[in-house]
Length: 278
Image (cartoon, rainbow, N blue to C red; front, side, top):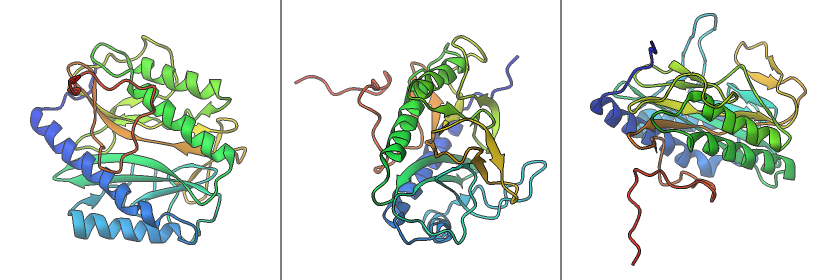
């Protein structure tokens, strides 16, 4: 028996609000993500925006899963070969860098979790392509979401697209159920086989957040206990949305005015009314 929670109508409404606010932090910080800024300054700006403007709580701050030390900052800033959980600090972003900003806010007890890639100045062709393919991977996974589909369908779609491009999928970190709890069941693997793992049902909410490496998939953990890098020092990229399984498909909960549109090859979800032909 699956222990994946099915959210109530009240939960879903709370998650829509939290998701939108999480996305709006990324909208707010976008103009500041440029050469010369430190990751610590980006953290400070996001933290102040969350607390003072939104009235939200930064979920990562002092977050402490078993076996970890408390996470010391409000956001994660993962630059170049950092796969995830990069701790903001004195690092200055420079021309050609790529950085993932991972933002989770808590509003009225509900979590809104999303991340975007930012390319600084004139990125290399490789960095741009890795970010684009990773974004496509996320969306190809999301497009599989509907009641009766399986979690393995999502992972398979992501893995196929990444490996076809010559990239690798990080195995140690995955998407996750989310609601009033930051990380809950299910685990959403970004690799796998179609028709395997849990069956999806309307009312489930989870993240899809593939971490794709330009080189090999192996990781190494830094001495701070949080920062994860590629073992071969190759570039890594990640994109993330929080998704609701609807009666007919899916709904992106981490939507805002600045949210990048889906790739052109992704059909709109069937439960969003399309404009009539005139």
